Amino acid sequence: MHVHRVRVGFGDCDPAGIVYFPRFFHFFHEAMETWFDEVLGLPYAEMIRGRGLGFPAVHTEADFAIPCAFGDEIAVEQRVVGLGRTSIRFAYRVRTHGDPQSPVRLTGATVSVVMDLDPRRPTFRRPVELPADLRARIEPLVGA
Image (cartoon, rainbow, N blue to C red; front, side, top):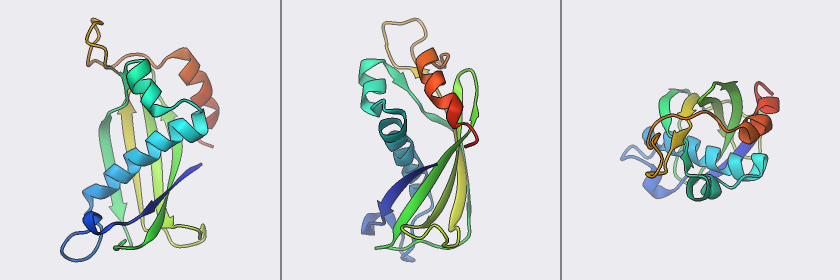
């Protein structure tokens, strides 16, 4: 499991003083970016700029249980729960950072596809097969 720490900022909150729900999808994406860097040892920026591969979300979902507010430090716990030919499915749990026994504040999931970002290739902006070296790094993590 990969854990991405987030300190909730003022701009993350709505007029009710709690995190505006779409921000969690941004936090999920941040967790995915840091997962590439910290777990796979493949910088996300290198995937985009060097290999011309993107990982846009094609499906997202979330179930909210306990609000998060300005100043909270939260942990976005990320796991790989599925690996397709052109996609990766992530599951998320959000808790209070530093307290893995704290109640789950929300759960979520994202399916990201591998997309060709190189305009010189005929598959530009289309899903492409997950590269073999990347698949080899991710497969042992599925369901862990």
